[in-house]
Length: 484
Ligand code: AMP
Image (cartoon, rainbow, N blue to C red; front, side, top):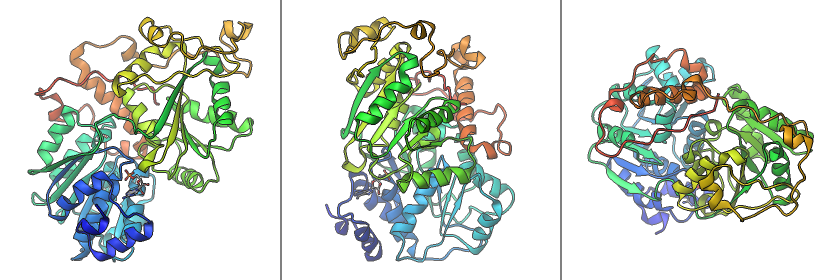
């Protein structure tokens, strides 16, 4: 199918053509006609599938007729992170260039004054993170009673980050008669229940089975001693044809350490995590997109859904704690049909986490050896068996005093005890699961929305739907997050 056959107006088609796209991606092909017909849509699609344009393109057409009144936006798009919100705004700018739609971006970490001025002038498209939106609503700067089209993007991530109570409050302020578009990469029961309560007779569109990494990403795993991780990364960076790469760490505090270490070794590296002020985050990301920085050391939350055209590599400096994060991380590369390469650096203790990833993606990640470094294999029996004999080190490193003591030659510190909150050392009874999950989510949300957290604390409030029994099998208990 061609874009010209999908039902979009000539001005949008012109902008698409100038962007260089001729064919809609599967999610666009399936969703756009329904959105244009005014139907609610439940889209199960990951980032990288062209999901953003599947709602921005028809929305531009829908909103082309009509004018916004002061403080009463005509459409609302909720995004879990500021970067994603900014990306959606870019998409509206690109495809809406032949329309006169006004747009406002309400994200935390930026001053209210400019945002309020924008709202006063009237906006057709309002893109917001939930915290900042509620904040402005509570100050009386905004009314949501004129919203015609409402989009919830990355709903599963919103759940992870503890945003669902905020979203429930926002939805309670919207008019009952509206069009709702709901997107999520996965559809666990909580998300399904939420969709059921927000959507009216939706058209369901699914483009890739949840948690399947793009077929265009070549994956590899190397198992090294903890003190060899940085050396392994440098080896990969030097031997791979790296144009630009995300390097993921599990802990925020390790991001700066790794970035500095890479710079010391002559690599052009920047850092991105939730503790940085927004202006620095934006500046770093822009430098990376422009190619002034080649490597970006980042956390899951900061890099979630970021769309960097033609990212050649993803490196997991740490094996992600949640298997699903693995899929999200490596999905940063191999986007829109391009090929990409993803390397994961594991240590002997990571066997269980790697096994969980293999279960989720339905295959083992091929093991490779790093020249000159020992490949110790996994400690865990089950994983050790499945990885035994493959990719053994070519040059087995002799045991040194450093490796015995866990102190690397390059000043790597001994492997730290994994930092876990007390509650996780002594697991609470099963019935406390939702409370723990909520605590965990709040921690993640705080990383990204720390400025808003003080205003929008919900104390120990849990939204009712999370405690209601599910029809399907309950979600497995998430692994503890080590961010923060
Ligand atoms: P998204 O899933 O929205 O993050 O989009 C992933 C990437 O696909 C972005 O870089 C888009 O610019 C690109 N893209 C969106 N629609 C198309 C299309 N129809 N053809 C080719 N690339 C596209």
